[in-house]
View 1 (tube, rainbow, N blue to C red):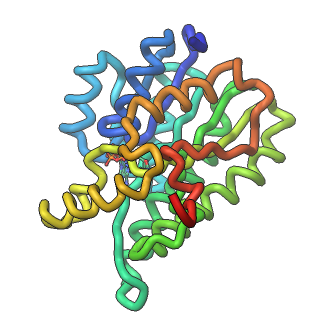
View 2 (tube, helix red, strand yellow):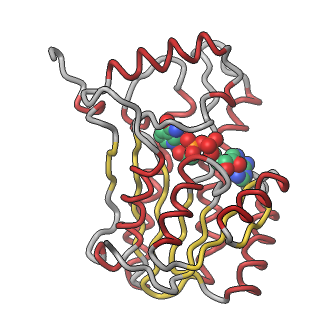
Amino acid sequence: MSELKNKVAVITGGNSGIGYATAEELKSRGAIVVITGRNSEKVAAAASNLQVKGVVADVSNVSAIDHMVEQVKSDFGKVDILFVNAGIFQPAPVGQITEEMFDHQMGINFKGAVFTTEKFLPILNEGASIINLSSVNAYAGMANTAVYAASKAALNAYTRTAATELAPRKIRINAVNPGPVNTPIFEKTGMEEEQLNGFAEAMKNRVPLKRFGRPEDIAKLVAFLASDDASFITGSEYNIDGGINVNPLLS
Ligand code: NAD
């Protein structure tokens, strides 16, 4: 198991789902963890359960990111692990995509992710690891996900270029592309329960391993990429998806 003793780790969107599981995993490996989120009550409850520091910041607001960085800097100094995880899933069919939906989803998933890294860079230690939470949707033509997919594809493109430019500081940056993972993200779309269950069943059947991922599955990969065991890995992407990206013609 990769050691993260005394490394300072910031996890955006750490009060729920994949971020929460990763906070538990990194803490269990010895990291000093800070979680962030946009809802103060949820952040406070999760931080208290996890016994970690919680910071409230909406990543779609660049001055809120500035404030978050200032808080982390004054409490912890420098950062070794930045897990850029905060994100939303807002499905909409092509032809019915509104400017508001576009700006909202891009504003959190892409702009928010980019400015999280941009603003934390001054306080990242040499040898730090940035992990961007993307999605296999970046490469799939799944119906109703055009803007979500584009937000994640854009994040992967940023990741590759940033890897080249951050290498002189020995900062590594990688992307993780999960398939479907069992988290509250789907309920937040506003879909009816019946629709959600149908979606989940259809999705599960498409996954060669015939199950949704667990947040803990993703957390373990993030912990590896955060650790010195991954010291030669940068600019890479990892699908963690039960094989869904293989997309067999016959199974
Ligand atoms: P989740 O809804 O449980 O967690 C999302 C987290 O992001 C929450 O803590 C939420 O507060 C935070 N967040 C959302 N908007 C924010 C904002 N504007 N500012 C700050 N924080 C904000 O969902 P999850 O599934 O754990 O999602 C985590 C990441 O994983 C997202 O980037 C998502 O796109 C990605 N992802 C999820 C799946 C999946 O199937 N669950 C698959 C691929 C990728």
